[in-house]
Every structure is written in C-alpha cells, then in structure tokens.
Length: 216
Image (cartoon, rainbow, N blue to C red; front, side):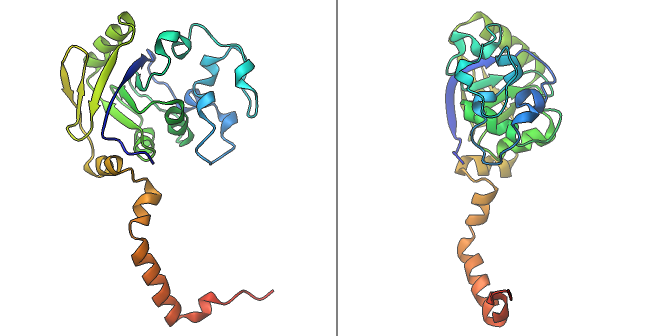
C-alpha cells in the first residue's frame, strides 16, 4: 500500500454524524475483493439521483448537486472532515477501499467505529481523532472558506490548520509504523519472505511427501 508520512490537501466537509459503511459503499457493490473499482460509487446514494448498480456507467448518471463532493469547490479534495462515529455499521473493508480510491488520504473526525478505524490503517488511509469542538470549528471554517487546506504530519502526529494552529493526535505505534512504511498485512508477512522460504525448504527435507502430487 502507499506509505503515509506528510500530506497537505484540500478539505471536504461531510457534516453528518453516524455515517455507516452502507452509506459509504452500498451493499450491492460488494461483489469484488480486488480493492479497486469502488471509488466511483463512494457515497453512491448521496452522490447520484438514481440507484447505482455494479457495471452501470456512472458518467451518464444524474448527480445530486446538493451533495458536498459534487460541488466544484471540493474537486480534488484529499482530506475528509466528518462527524462522530464515522464508519459504523458492518465491517466491510470495501468502505476504506472506496474512500482511498476516490482520492482521500486522511479522515478527521471526533470518533470512528473501531473496525473501520483499523481497516483504514491497513489500507493506507489515515484516520485522525480530534476533539469534537475542534472538528465543529473546522467544519464551519471550511464551509466559509473555499479552497481550505490543512497539513498532516504523521511522524510528528500533528494537524496544522491554515491559520497556523497545531493540533496533536494519538496514533498506535504499530499502525503508525505500518503507515509510515507502506506495510499492509501482506507486506508485513513478505518482510519475512527469506525466513519463510528457508522454513519451507527445511520442512520438505524432513517431510518430502508433502511435495508429492495427490493421486488422481
């Protein structure tokens, strides 16, 4: 996965609490485990005026002009600002896949659902918890300020606002290390590829029948 160290980006505010994973990526799109192809259907029921289905041409679908991500001022946003309990509901990993593929690198909220929070970190997406009063003021500022950007420094665990204010956030040391190095669960395993190959070779010497082809 893509490593995360520092990032400065345009902020898009999703001023809704308790956004669940079915709202992030509706259930009808959960037919693939390839991690790609979900970005166009992020927040599908809010972004479009018709019902989305797998394989449907999104380019020809009518957009909801009231939805925040359809507003031109937020085109290219890479930091999502959300309310409390973001990512609640089912544990589908497709939710962070869709958010990341859309182009977001980080999500700022007062709280997250636990499973969603962990799934973000495993997919190169940085979830940041800030106090609710900070998020509340920031949403107001972003809504009033077209082109609002902020900076995130994962090594320092800080968010720097446009006015220079700095807010520190907590980060689990293990998840932080994985994000800094771009290690997902497979990447973590592959760090030990030489030891795994050595173990498998030694095991086959002791138990050569394991390599025998099964009888037809």
